[in-house]
Length: 282
Image (tube, rainbow, N blue to C red):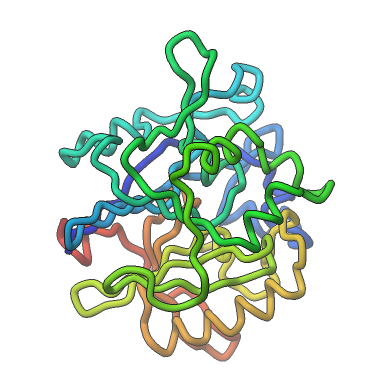
């Protein structure tokens, strides 16, 4: 098995929305905002090469939205998804599986692309199976008013229309050395991948833990649909992560790629932060 971090660029979101009830005077120390209260966030994905499969976890915002949309989120960075795949010797056509933690636009927008004259939408990964789950698919395709702006139908419906959609039926092993945890606080049935690699467990944190600035238990996003449930799920997971020394792969932290956590008298706190290659050498 080989694993490659994939940089799909950066975007901005409101710092208050990202930290919920936590005052700006506190979160601004770890995630400084600009004059409009916007903080920079990564669109980080993970590519797993193993046993004849090339599995991509999430795929960023994509490039098919209108210019007004991208201006709102201040997309930036020298790298995009295709560039980062090419850097490791792969193309979108090589991907066999696209695992979608959930269907918010910043996690699945790269799933679908326009043709050259922008008249038809089709899968960006023409040879891949797209993995979601039945509960979250229903949640995303029949959206509540709170999340409707995050579930863009052009990112989602063409996946099913292509015939390339499959559902993860339950928690546990999906591929060799790849299992999933379902959590329901951020959005219904978000999936958190756990990958066994070189004697360690890497956990792709998605929106259960957006950044190291979110490690303290009450630091929960205002975007979460069930914040109290997020806290329960987060507490259970973070205690386990500290006990088992999981490597937490941070999808949205613009500075820190990975971290570990430990138990302290104040609860679970940051232990170490590091780039993926510092531990695994890829």
